[in-house]
Length: 124
Length: 107
Image 1: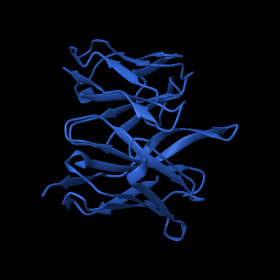
Image 2: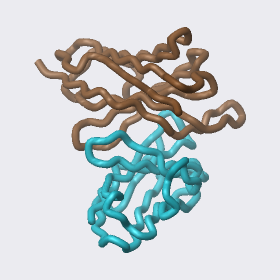
Image 3: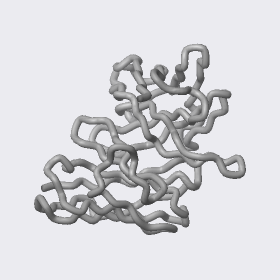
C-alpha cells in the first residue's frame, strides 16, 4: 500500500517561495505521474502540476510561470516550488499519485493516493 | 481548458434513500472521468475512475455512469458515513486536469 508523506513550511510572507516535498513509501516510483493539487480554505481542488520519474513535467497554465516541480529519484521524492506567493496562494497543498494509462504518448491519469496535505498560509 | 460543472451544489437526502450527483464537461471527455469523496477535515479519496470503475475498497452502493459530456454518481442507499463533498475530475484533455466545484451531500 503506497504512502505519500509530505512536508514544508506552513507560513510564508508575500513574495516568498513555497516549497513542499513529498516522499513515496511502500510502492513503485516509476510508471506513475506525480502531481501537486491545492485546495483554498472552504473551496474546491485545483491541479498545479505533475512530474514523472524521468523528470518530464506539466503544469497548470494559470500557475506555470511561478511553478517548478522537481524529482529526486534516489530518494523517491518530488517537490513543489511556487515563487512570489500572495494571499491567493493560501491553501492546503496535496501531493498525489496519478495512475492510469498511456495512449499514443498521452497520459490519462486519475489520483488514487494522496498525501496528508500541508496547510500553507501567506500573510504579512 | 475543460470546465467541469457539478450539480446540485448541495443535496439533502435521507438515510437509505438514493442520491444522484451530476457532472457536466464543457467538451467531450469520453469516459476519462473520476469521482472523489472528501469528508470534513480529510484528504480526498478516489471512488470511481473511467466513469464507472470502482476503486479498490469502494462499496458497491457507489455507481458511476455516463460518457461524453454528462456523468452521474449514484449512491443507492445513503449511509450517514457518506456525508461529504464529492468532486468530479476530467483527465481527457490536459494540462490542466480540472475538477468540478463539488457537491456537498447532507443527510
